Length: 186
Image 1 (tube, helix red, strand yellow):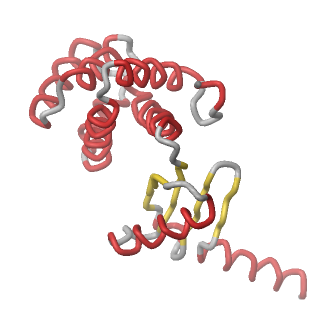
Image 2 (cartoon, rainbow, N blue to C red):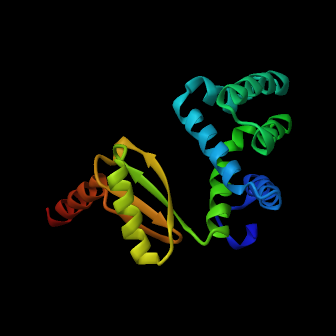
Image 3 (cartoon, rainbow, N blue to C red):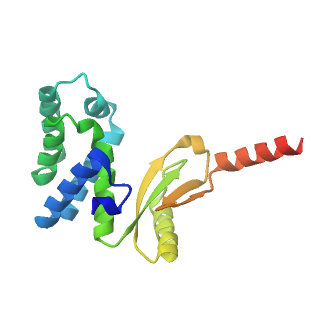
């Protein structure tokens, strides 16, 4: 399955595929996805956790102890916790965000969903997220899972990547287009 989806490759793809197959066999795909989403949210909101995950300075033992405490406080247990501990023991915790992204792609494929990478300048309201999902569903004919990333440098608008297609309606891109047009005209 990993070979069919170009977003699921390399080390992170192999780990994600192994986790997905285990979760599918145990019939806990949604629970594992929810746990990984919770961990990803915690990671995005904590510079200390990012440092723990990404820094090669911490020993595997120190990473493992700290990660165990974080997982217990977050209520993440079972397959998800064991998997994150395995990444730590194998010194691959730095790749956890790529593994989570690949796992989400596998889950979406399994459920017949499409996954869109959406970049916005500011967080979207639930109403706007629902509207975006509905618009993408009307284009693809599938339910669309959104991976939303905030990047203030795009100034406004949004960038949507869905499979091999990309729509860039960011203000930064529009301003650059105007700038180039003015250079050519002058």
